[in-house]
Image (cartoon, rainbow over all chains, first blue to last red; front, side, top):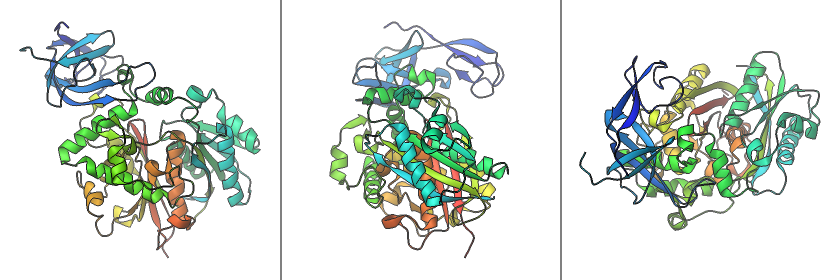
Length: 107
Length: 375
């Protein structure tokens, strides 16, 4: 897993940083976000393992809520070992989803 | 306000062999019979999943045909797991507008004949697209919220166990509830982990069932005092605080403002406990106890003057046919106010009650205050 920066959006009206998505800023509704690259390391806020995932997903399936730099939060699929809350993870983007893995690298 | 519930009807919740429309018809027939078969001029139907798992759309026509209401107007309402509450609020607006005098609201869902993974995927359609994209389900996101609540307030999972046990105990007195037997704390603690920290018996069941109410212009013991609804960001990553649901707080503020009464006036509450920790968050968001303190109601006891909570068994005990639950919460409060709750009837009979419903992962919530004149 390579450690490429994560591209986020910075609202030029209210300065909120958020993951790029279609539509306006989720806080103020402005429609002119600016691109911003942040490091791919984050801290796990909460994580869980599903034993009854939705159709089309493996069992067990792990997801984590992660806080990245600039207070950007991301919901990611956990690859590999389940990280405890507070653990440092590295996050990568694959198509429209994010994946996280326990990190031992120094940011 | 000038509308009141005059009759309720149920198609028992649980695993049912009948198709969706027959369940809707059973509940509607019970409500109409209880009402004396007076003319209905608007039919409001609530459902969440018929298109995705039952292969049935055009529900209003189907229900109208099945129960012989072709002369009424009709509309279908969908707001995920709050569909039933949204349908009721639509009926209130219709009566309060002065255009309609008598409305039949029917809420129905049929889930148990599809595989759990298929139902989980269908329910996940009510989540934000970025959450669906990583395979999040309703229990998964609820587990994250529950973890954060437990961490922030030091609420142990043994409190969640107590919530589930209380729900199943209460449901024994509700003949329309899915679960008619109590569960022990040991059974709850040993039930399989669904999404940590939530075990199977902390989670709502997959259920079939239907409920109906007749709403009529005028006043009575189950009068509409106030309604409120509110939104919150759909995506968890966009929410400032994950240990509270802003949509519940907003809906409650609006309903109480309209009703002109206070939390102290409420004697019975039916709150949306699709997951055991949510009931604690609900009681705090609705303003009955400060943030982080609802666990004491179950670990110790409710404070003096606290309302009775979920005497029907709530969603954990009643079952959760998702599109029907929001109306069941309202109907169960109405039955208490009308003195029609049978073995579950509170004594003394409550005069004011609150029904609370959560749509999706609490992105669109509803509060309904019902009550009659002081005696």
